[in-house]
Amino acid sequence: MKSVKFLLAALAMVVGFSASAQDFSDPKYAIWGETPEERQANIEASNYLKEAIDAKDFKLATEYFQQLLNNCPAASQQTFARGVTLYKNKAQRARSVEEKRVFIDSILFIYDQRVIYFGDHHKNGKDYILDMKARDMMRYCTTNRPLLRQGLKDAVDAAIESGRVNLDIVASYYRYLCEDFEYDDNVTSDMILAEYERLSPLFAEISAEDEQYKEAFETSFGTSGAASCENLEALFSVKLAAEPDNEALLAQAVALMSRAQCSSDFFFATTEKYYTVKPSSETALFLAQGFQARGENDKALKYLREALAVETDPAKKEPLYVQIGLIEIGNRNYAAAAEAARELRGINPQNGYSFFILGQCYASTPCTDDKIGGASVYWVAYDAMAQAATLLKDEPEVQKAAQQMMNAYRASFPPQESCFFAELAAGDRYTILCGFAAGQATTVRYR
Image 1 (cartoon, rainbow, N blue to C red):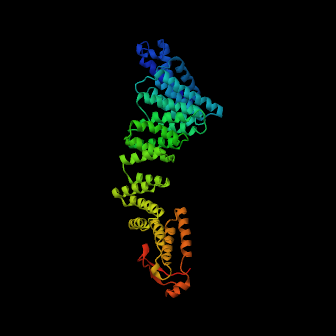
Image 2 (image 1 turned 90 degrees about the vertical axis):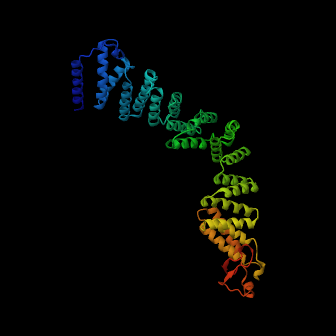
Image 3 (image 1 turned 60 degrees about the vertical axis):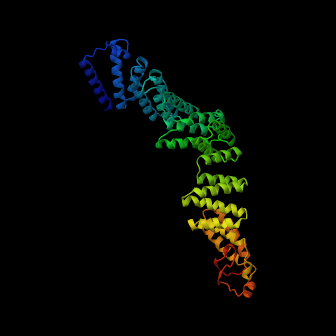
């Protein structure tokens, strides 16, 4: 039935051509052949090619396509567009892997031929053709990574040359390049870095909808083995020397080097510079954690307190107070730690770190006025740490530390004899008399 429909359509075209009595000797038909007869035959073949593809008569369509490719390849871009459609259909119906590979090779060949004859087209030229080729390669050529990478690179290069860049293709090309760094010896760290430098300016001024491609591009670089601290320092030291106050460049350097877990002096100097250019509680907290890890607690506290002085969002103040409290506990500055913990509890009573910090502060100052050897503070310290262990269940390491301290505080509870002489019975309510826990109510318990 399909063949009958096609023949009827073809007959209608022949009648149409005859009826119109077109003069194929007119120079405007010269692209279709040397003689009027050749021109008419090729124009008819172009129309028959479309009809054959629509009728799914791919054998006949192949004959018409070959006729056009051999006789008048520069006549129409539609020849190549229909040729790709034809061979995609043939690839879909291939009866073996080898046959499908032949059809895919034909698709790539058709794109290359189109570049030869229409690469200089003002609208659908080389960049447009190679972009379409690259997208089909991502569909058909994923097992041949060198070929795929080259196809994507060709598309990116042509787009840059024309000034019409599709950032999704740039991000895809760079993703494949970075992924193959681990497996392909031909992909070197120098290549990853050079392409990063070359392509990153394309993402400088982009629309909101293209942000996803910028993020994908940066993630590819950040997670590649080539993005080592040494390589990143070599890359950004030169760039920042030329533009030391470039906020976007500083942000990029900090993001990539922090992802690589760098800890060099250059990294911290760069992050401090970024904080100077664009202060934020997030950057201050990051710097504080880094300096704390390096044992530079004074610097850590400096950034945390600077951030607190300008931060107005209570949710962003929470992690700042947590970090201050933990650092001051490490410094044995329990007064400052307790103050930070109380501020934290005022913002969020369910933040377990406030109890984790306060419990240690309570236990740091035995109250000698309690007539049981100062052991009363361990009751309230235990209470606070029990609360911390409950609230910090999503942070198992901290929760474990809280539980260990609970055991230590329980072991420091007064013996029953001491409580007897102090007229304290188990279960009685008791208010701490002095120290950081002064005024806190708790329950009498024996060791």
